[in-house]
Image 1 (cartoon, rainbow, N blue to C red):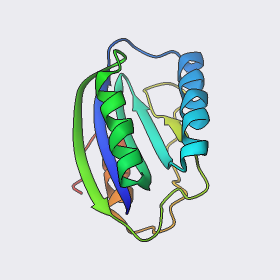
Image 2: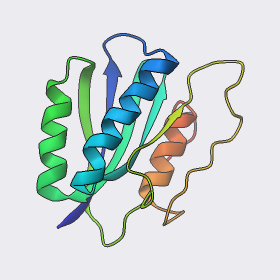
Image 3: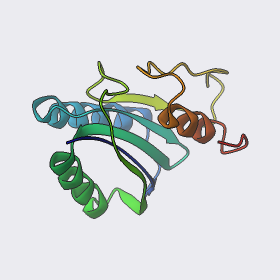
Image 4: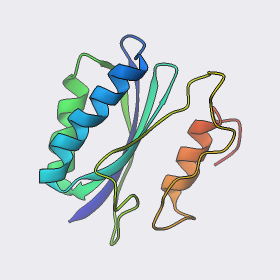
Length: 133
């Protein structure tokens, strides 16, 4: 069964841009052969990730993420069956929305279903949950 899974966590230590790029590459190297797609947002030591794939594969990955020392306070938010993937073309997209002078005013997410819960959660996270979901 194909599922969409969304979780949040805090980084044990702040990630530099180079470390985020290395993390993205590591995720892509794992996700491509396992047919996992998704999006990772990073904001000043906070992560929010949307994953899509076969249920058993995603659940095994989440178990690994929970035991990863780079993550703290890992919380599952959404675990739902889907018929189509959001981020179907991304083995792992990454957007760093940490406060910085070059932070984009608006972030466009390449969603298959633009009005999905994934989109509303990502937008809320990217706006520090200022807007209601």
